[in-house]
Amino acid sequence: MSRLASKTAAAAISLSLLIIFRGCMDMAPNHRDFYKGNIELLGEIHGSEPNIRLNYIDLTIDMSKPPSELTRKLGIEISPGKIIALNEIDVNLLSSLAKPDPVPDMMSGEPIAGEAIYRLDGYNIWVAMRKPITLQLGNNAKAVIWDMPRHKRYVMPLSGEDVAELFGAPDRQRDTFQY
Image (cartoon, rainbow, N blue to C red; front, side):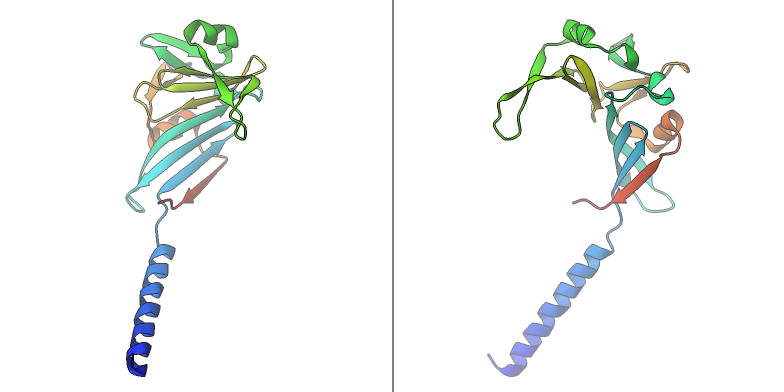
């Protein structure tokens, strides 16, 4: 290969890499994480400012902490017309609704003593030492959360408007780009 051809190839590669990396740096965020107290929502951002549309596909509530004013008003619909307040969820209730699955250790794969996951349609509830510790609602039309005092029903996934109405402003949020 001649010197000119070598320099031309090197320049073309450099220009290509610059375009690729510059493109990656300019990628607009497409995911939003919303945090408020013991509540975390993972969402997708569609469109661009000022016309973005949010679609929250995952809601996780840390139930190991004392209930907040916000979580005290929430309930889940475990079947049409059957709503349970979050503060009423306990192992006895869960055992009447579903069979527990063991939680495997990440390293050994062996079940962790005293831990289980109760899987209801649209919900996963992790339990440790007979106490609910985490409630997760996924991107599943069967997952429904209720604002109990207002008798208002929200079906997953939640829109940005739903989240603002149900939870108010976040304590913090993070926008990221994910492939």
